[in-house]
Image (cartoon, rainbow, N blue to C red; front, side):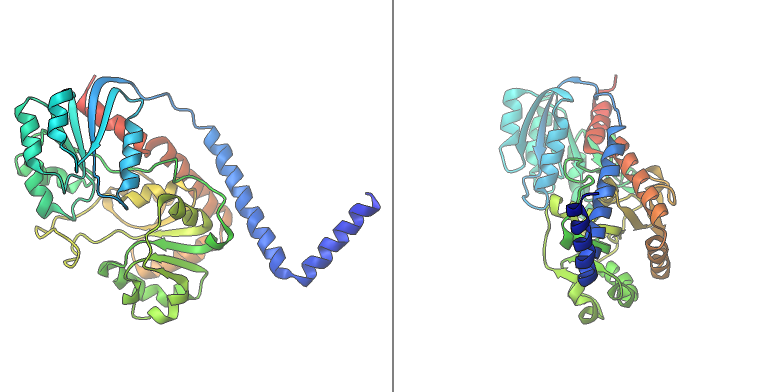
Length: 376
């Protein structure tokens, strides 16, 4: 070793002794960089054949509702590309029926459709053009969707319970198709230092969530926790945990993914279908299917700790590629456990990421959708 190298090493050791924060920062940065490299290497091993190309002309009608729906519009539109021979894109704010009657697509696929006039749907069907809708917020708006669904030839819903619900309304062709994740956004990343925390939750403080978080507030206040979303001032002990809450912000996909990547554990808590304040679900339709965040969190290669939805097992295996909790106390116990079992935490997170990238991207969902619309 040269004298210069020895002096640099001594200087680094001396600097570290004087600035322990620098040592912790270096260690944290190295750990995240190393994990990011491992995830990227694992992703290189996923080899999937391209989806079959459907000889069809699809007119895709995006929500046109702006943020936070605009990233979904883009992700779905991008997923159609390369899977059909012809794709036309518009949104619900446009004269869709006029366009459809002019270009005569094989099918018109409407996303969400809550703000789309069904008179246009009826007009297209009368002209012999097949129509389909993909409901993205079931069962929370079933008071509205129940009036819309019968106007379409084909109904897709992200909620399993709603399949029979729409069939009982007279819809003959109903399919279960959950949302997924956009791998261009929700994937492993090396996060900013400010995004690195032990525990993270991103979402709105619906009253059902508040009831759970009220029971874990003191625990989360004692950890390196980051919470972001609206209405969190509803917490009973809001002042205690307020320094750890980023209040009143909507984050885009990349920033959300950065926070997921920066956390050792991301909590997922499904919205209650029975919250009377923010639901249009007076029929009390239940919910058993995982929310879109389930796939987005898993795609980022972080450990997901989620409450239980009974159909979650159709997508992940609890204890193997995702972790579940059924009570506030179990949430606390599992956070403690996985923060103290690093290798096990990372192994489960890696499995969840790989399964998501293989099976739960929007590309896969569109492949399923087209296979149902154009079998064989």
